Length: 438
Image 1 (tube, one colour):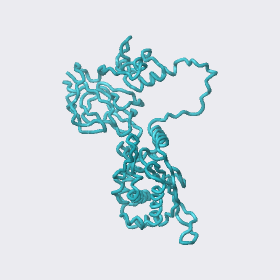
Image 2: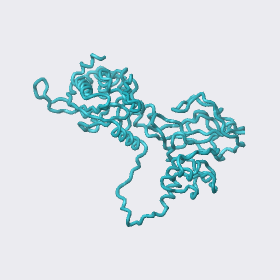
Image 3: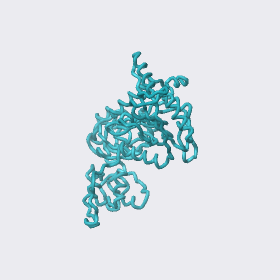
Image 4: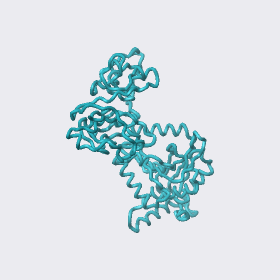
């Protein structure tokens, strides 16, 4: 007898509540081994291959490519313990050691139901699991189990997103015929029904649609949500200063002239930031609104903005305060390459405590950064360019950069923020100032 185990979409990182199926790596009937990647999903932060903790035969998949699933929704079912030759090649069904956030080792396998041996390639409907609706309309949308709809019985729909879409648009799922396996109602079925429903409002009363509509989803949607939350929750303020970066650029040229890995300007600015945060730890903190407490953080996990084809991402350099300029350069290069290749993990993109934003690469001088919630500050750096500057009492052409600091006014006052920014500017103008903290 086979035991059918259901594998649900695990928690892929802090703050990630859903993921979109990009590509299935296995088909129904395939034999999978423990920890074998079975699906590639895209979260708001990264592309991730999800490994299955069971070994056996895939009996069902839930969700078409392009479908968004919430964390905890079924991904697939695996029949383990098959006596057939195909299933004998698979590993046992104990939990694997490959840990994603929210699912890991040591927990005993919960038994689902016993089924008769199923030929390879057959689709096995998952066990009926009643779902208690949060409100009366949810009851009309069905209990969320597969199977042909019958009067008074469950509706053939699994995805909570599909139920929500139907509920919000007043659509009765019992009137639909699903296009999925065993009549499973998919998101495309609901969208198709909504498109074909007659519009009760006279056409003349509906204003003509204008422009192109672009869904706020994936990275763009995550950025929108985070920036909106930052503006909504954080009472921010910005201060800025122009600094003469001529000596910093000369110091970098001298470092790179002796051979070895090249030191980037971003790495030098990062090293200056960590030294400044050591002096002004208020800016390496977060606000616990529930407890009404400011939490000062012991380590600097430095985020930096990176523009990619998929949009803006903010990789995080862990324990930046313990790294020198060479180590920072190496880590910036590694994370930037991973960002461009789309291989950053959720761990690479979460947990930042302070962000450095070099928008000078876009050819602009200044900006007012929006804080990367739940952090307390962000330092913005404009382009470094030749400008007339009074140097040692005389007008000269110097390499000038504008620095801007946006900070959470709850964690400190302007004096602290100004002190931080002034120290950063002093280190940019006179890199020898930094030697005192090395």
